[in-house]
Length: 209
Figure 1 (cartoon, one colour):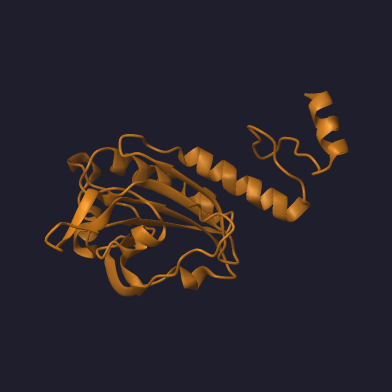
Figure 2 (cartoon, rainbow, N blue to C red):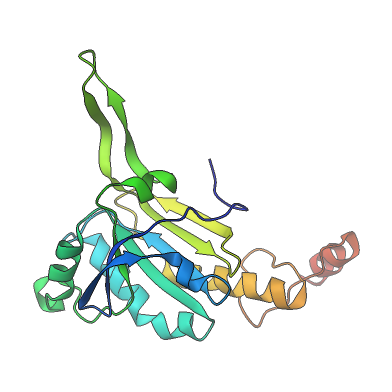
C-alpha cells in the first residue's frame, strides 16, 4: 500500500546528527510546518551501493537546503554502527563528511510502518516468531511536504541505486505546483514549461510539444 497522500508515519528513534553526535530522540516532527523532508532508507552500513547513494545525497545537500528541504537517511543498523561508518574515511569505504541525520531503525518498526522492510515476521509451526525474507530496508525514498504528508515515494530493490537528481526534480515539481498551481508533465525540470490542469491547458501544451 502506498503512503502517498497520507500523513508520514511518526517515530522517535536514535540517530547520528552532524556526522558525529548520537541523539536518542530524533523525530521528523521538528520539520513540521518548516521544511520539506526527503526521507530515505538504505539496506546496510558498510556495504557497496549504499555509500554511493549516501555520499551523493551529501554532495547535493546544499541544493536540497536551498529549497527548504531536509535530507534524512535511515537503515536498520544501530546508531553506533552509523557513527563508526561516518567516522571511516571514504578511501576506506566509509562515509566520512556526511552531515545530515542518519536514523537507527534497530527495532525495524520504522521500516515496517513505511512498508519497505524486505520481508515480514511470521510464526512457525511451533508458534515461534520467524522472519521470512531479508530483514533490512529496501532502497526507498519519501518526499514529505511541510504539512507532514507524503507526496512522492519510490522503492528500489537492493542492487538498484537511486537517482538523487530525480529526487531533486520531484521536489522542484512539488514546489512549482504549490507556488504556481500548475501541473508538471513528463520529464519536466525546473525552468521548463508546465501546464494548467485543464483540458485546454493539456491541449495547448501537447500542441506546442
